[in-house]
Each structure stands twice: as structure tokens, then as C-alpha cells.
Image (cartoon, rainbow, N blue to C red; front, side, top):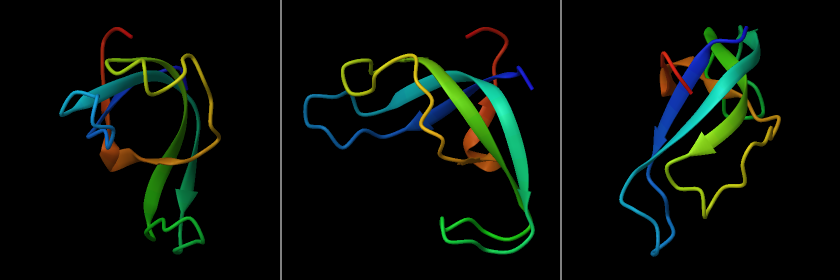
Amino acid sequence: MGDLVAYDWEPDDDDAPESATDFGEILGMRWVPEPDGHCLAANTWVYFVRWTHSTCPDILPEPFYDGEPTLASDLRLVKYG
């Protein structure tokens, strides 16, 4: 808990840059042993992140916690947030 992470994504908004990165802090995690209703694959870790800022701040409010799980494979560790 407390690790700083980044999530790279491609905005759909025409006014947004081609790619964006959201930065946040890990609040919790959960093992998903079987597929569930959130389209999560089996045998994977998901993390719950409090997002602190983004390279695309006009699209996403900051800081915020949306309660949605993020796949471990979609996150990367960063040294600073």
C-alpha cells in the first residue's frame, strides 16, 4: 500500500492529446481467482488507486477515487507522483 503508480491511456476526446498518463497511490488490492462481473480475468491482481493528477487534467478531476479496480498489468511503478 502507498506505492506510487502510473496508468497510460488514450483519451477519446478530440481536444485531448493522443496519449495521457494518470498518476496515483495504491490504496488496496484484491486477488481475482475467477472472472467476475467487471470483466476481470481470472488469476490476476487488481489494485484500487487514489488518482492524484494526470497529464490530461481537463478530462479527469483530480485528485479522485472512483472505486474501480485497475489491472496490475495496466499499472507501472513510479518513483514520484
